[in-house]
Image (tube, rainbow, N blue to C red; front, side):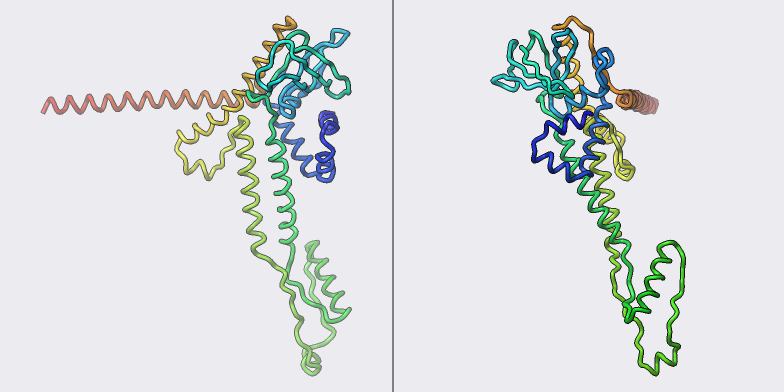
Length: 329
């Protein structure tokens, strides 16, 4: 239902593009589902709201509005802030909240009967979800074309219907794993006396096509690595790690947490405003996988600090021993 509701709110131009491109839709859904797992909100469970609703809205619209309806039930939806500035909003500014998976619209006053939670400090959606969905789609199409090209083989040109049938039967047998010999109607003497030339071969094999496959696959893996690293999950390419020092690898891991920290802080601050307005105790937390990722990173950093301190102590001891030896001489 998330994507259906989201899809209905797209421009007609974007709708047409997605309708004609199931590959891009598939990647768009996958990337949304993956990023939704980065954070959890207990507001959803406490108010019987479908899991992932808040994250989906934050990722795709940049902000989410929280208010109450006439029956005092909480309402969550994508918000349109009617302020003179996208950043310097004031208490009492008009906010239009469209309820998620509904056409209901609520006109509210910011800080009086509604609050906003932002995706990040720039209050913008994760637009690169669309960029990477399109890139992955283009790579899928290219891979599909090259895979089909890799099937091409040098094909004999038939000179008559009998030879065509024989060649076709051979190709069909090869496709299912059976090898079959082709029997000519003429023996060797007849071929010579009738001046029959050997079958011509149409050369269709493109060896470079199979080489391009690995480059496209590497490109796709590199894009995935970049995307997931940006959103908190450091996917390290083994060949690259072999050429990097431990400090460089750790720097990459730390870099992967910069944007996630910013997103987390904005979610926490958002719920603090909601709690203050409605006298509640809603909260946000990291998803389980992201928790493990951050725990491993912290343990690695601590281990490196311990090892570094040990190395320094060893160097100091060595220098002291050297000075003592010089004094004895």
